[in-house]
Image 1 (tube, rainbow, N blue to C red):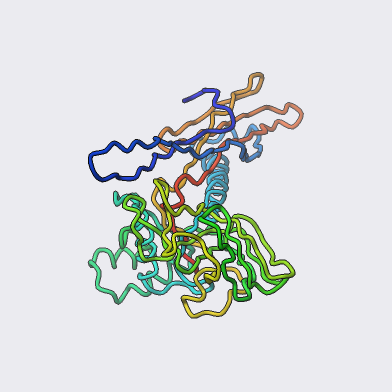
Image 2: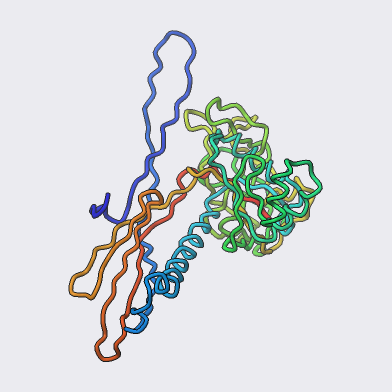
Length: 375
C-alpha cells in the first residue's frame, strides 16, 4: 500500500501441506502455514547533476539524456541482485563447463518443475547467457518448427517461446565457482532420519571443499511428488548453504536446503530404507552419474528455468523530503516498483544535483519451482 509503514521485513505466506487419509475415521492434522521473510534493506540509487541549460531542453530530450540512463542502471542492479538467488535453488540439470547444445537439457529442467507440481499456466521462464541463447538458436535452425518461429529466431537471434518456456537472454546470469569436490564421499549418518545437514566422510583430507551454491545428491534418496508423496524416480538434489572444507579425517557435515523430510505432510524425499544410512555415495552436480571425474574448482554459468512464483520482489515507498527543489515518486502497481526522485539547486554552480532511489528486497519464495542449468 502506498505510504504504508510496513517495517523492513515482510512475511509471505506459503500454502500448507496435507496428507490424505483412507477410511471413515477422522484423522485430524494441523493446518500449518509457513512463511518466507522478504527483507527490505537494499537501497540502490543513481546520483547525477545537470545545469540550467540542460533543464531548458525539451522533456523528451531531457528524459533520454538523463532520466532513462539512470533508471536503466537501477533496473540492471535489481536484475543482477535477483539472479544471485540461484544459490537458493537446489534442482539442477546440465553439465558444468559445457554449454547445452540440445533442447533435451531444457526439457529436463521442465521435467524437474513438473515433478515438483509446478503450475502449467504460461508463467514458466528460462533466463540464459548470450552464449547459451546463440548456441540453441543456431542448433534449432535445422529442427522442424513452425516457419514463423524459425523466421523470428533468425531475424532476432532470440529463442522467444519454446518447449513450454518464455526465453530471455540476460548478461547478468551468474557464474558459479564450484568447490574442489575430490575424494570418494559417502554418508555417515546411521541414525539420522533426515534434517538440514548431511554427515559425510571419505573426502580428500583438508583439500576437498564445497561452496555455497554447490548441488549434491545422495544415492537411494529420491525426490517425491509433493502431493502424492510417491517417488519420482529421480535422485533428490540439495544445495549447499555454506562453504565447507574437509577436516583431517576427511569428514564434512554439509548444511543443505531443502531440509530432508522422509515422512508426514511435508515429506519431500523417499529412501528404500526409510532413513539416512551410512555408506551412500555423495555426488556433486551429478558428476558420477554423468561419468565425469570429481568436480574440481571451476566456473560455470548458471541459467535458470523457473515459474514466476519461485521468487518474489518487494519494494517500499521512500518518504518524500521537504525543503528541496523537487521530490516525487513513481510507482508501478503491476511491477510493484517504486522509485523516488529528489532534486536540489546549487546556487554557487547553477547545477541541479539529483538522485533516484529505490528500496527493495528479493527472496526465494518456492525454490522447488526453479531449476538451474549449468553451462
